[in-house]
Length: 137
Image 1 (tube, rainbow, N blue to C red):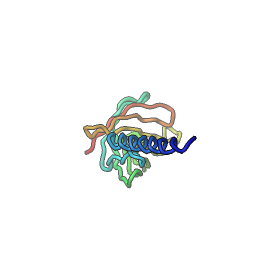
Image 2: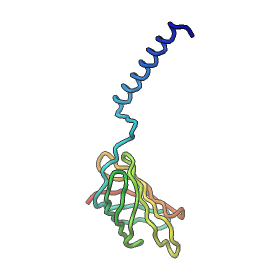
Image 3: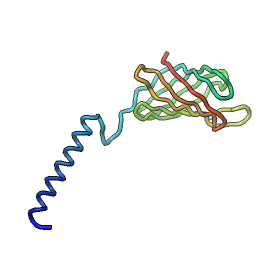
Image 4: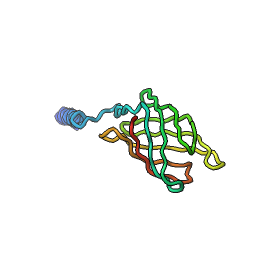
């Protein structure tokens, strides 16, 4: 490598870095990740499971940054504490529940939609699952 090639490589590196930063700014990307959506509040969840048919439940979510805590309530599972997280518009929360004599984790995963509703899935400790939607009260 001679003395003339070093400045050319430095200029190419600087131009490439500047182009990458410009693309990140134009698309809203950042090195720190997405800001978590605000999902705190009282939600009514409706859905249908593989085994049990349709259901309605509610969850009161409290949010601290990306962390979720709260209270879940349904006729089938009763009152339960939930813990979860938010990443961008994606949320996950779970609770330990009695599933017909067996204790297992019930996990909700959903995406906050543009219209403010939730759309996602429920996993019943690997024993079954289903789809859910949610609306704020």
